[in-house]
View 1 (tube, rainbow, N blue to C red):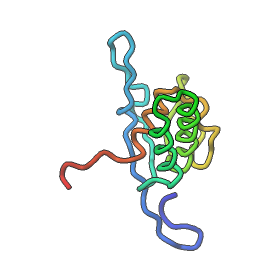
View 2 (view 1 turned 180 degrees about the horizontal axis):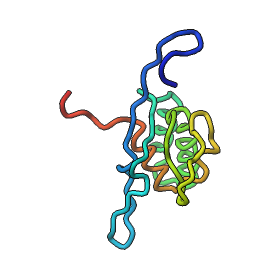
View 3 (view 1 turned 120 degrees about the horizontal axis):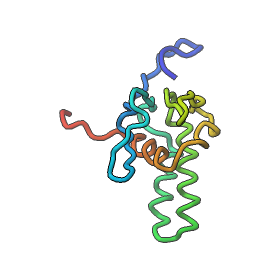
View 4 (view 1 turned 90 degrees about the horizontal axis):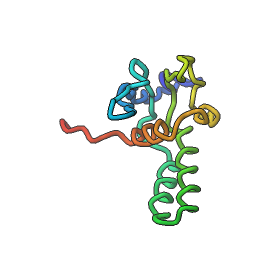
Length: 127
């Protein structure tokens, strides 16, 4: 999704997030299972992602609606995560994510939450 398209239009480069920012804490010890890996996100975010987030907020205390809304958030990641170098627990490369819902099925809930938290970039204090 970067560089030039088939028709020669220039695309906005993706935004890269360092995999070391994913942290798991087990018995008080921090682990960085994706250290040395990365995830590329599209700049901006899809309309579907924004609507899924709104649905999640609206669901509030209704567990059934929250489950459906979270499912929609995860489904919308396929339009916002364009590439990655993530590996599984055995060090095998995961399938590429862009428009590939199956690529997300083996991720833990913590990894999905981490991806979700990175769709919209953190504010830049220098700007």
